Length: 211
Image 1 (cartoon, rainbow, N blue to C red):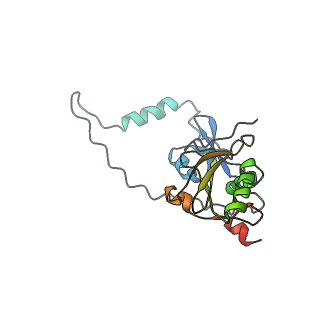
Image 2 (cartoon, helix red, strand yellow):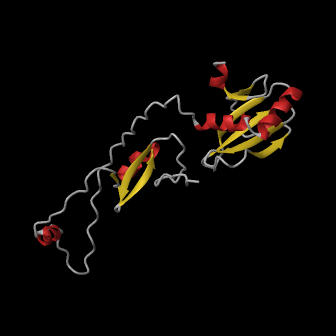
């Protein structure tokens, strides 16, 4: 299976459907995610496709280097080096405005929900819903695990959490943990942005509203 690309700046796994920018560093092209474009430019990386700046090729390269040396201030041996000039504060980098997401391309959360509903974990949650009643539900990123989505389904006296690895379609949905009191969950897990329908299927809040 093809290895997932990672951003050369932040190291995050680039998800399917996410826009990727190509930059050249030391002659090697590197993938950069949408959020790290400004950082790549500040690092001096050149956008892929732009020509490399030309250097003198008319035999005067040595003279060009000599002029640079002559511009340096003379300093007596043993004297302290001059203090470096303070560089002007860099203007805030303008972050490129992200392009609107193509609605025909599922988001990472939508992909995670679809895989959960077709898994053994989804069937377990549906069975518990028929027994315990309508639960709370949330879908969010797994802390410290790029490329994984955390699904939380909670009732008054019990809760379950499952993980979906978006970067590995062959990895089964796996259980992260379970407990009894909703207060045991961290704050992000209690951001109820999803629901479980009467058929026991999980849906994001915006999708559920369109039913």
